[in-house]
Image 1: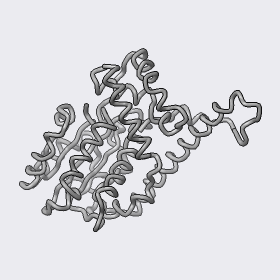
Image 2: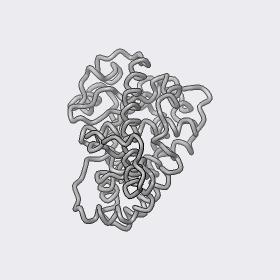
Image 3: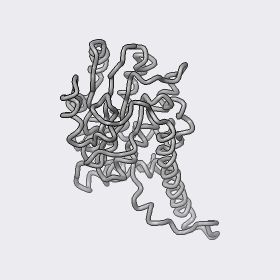
Image 4: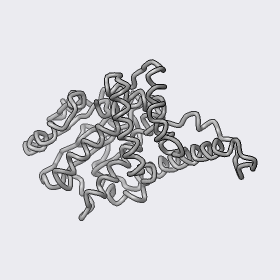
Length: 299
């Protein structure tokens, strides 16, 4: 299964069967109900070659993980210190195909003393926000760009080797069929040792979506067919100054959080209304849901 891929269409019957198989896990959980949209179930089916049995096993694991980890409760204020140096950035503009762009600049400073748990929460938060944008745009996929220009310290890539592997495993397991493409730009010689340590843990489909660009011409050929130079940093052949603007990222991520909170609030009210549907007493403040709920997307 490939983390981030294009949206696939499948028959409604397997989707209904898959939903029935996990329905017990969805009951009384607005967050899981929001997550388990038809588009989400389709991705799990595609990732498992349309095997309902295999998709059921995979989706159950993800729903159980989400019930424990509660990614919907992680917000910008919880992780912003990990983002302050600009190492992992969700660009405010999409590419020409409406795909969000997740940029990883390895040379950028990271928060000193960051634990594996903190970094995991930050990673999950960024995956949640990236997935939300891709679904809101109707594409269901994203582009990941690794900018290794100026990178020289192997200890700054991830906290530990085990954490590095866990991040890859988590993305593949719980965010299947999400990767459109990943481009590694300006990889230094020491990068290949890192690559050799990670590639055995990559799904073959995910691996096939990773490309490498070692000079300006290759980078432009890989990125600029769909990504405007205006939103790319100069190290990636664009015109954007190299300095990371935290204030701009802060505004962008807070806006996404506001939408996430509103979506979950609407789903919670809908669940509460359903629970009180046959009760004698009316549900207080149960105002009609806006049409926004129809556009609720999965993570």
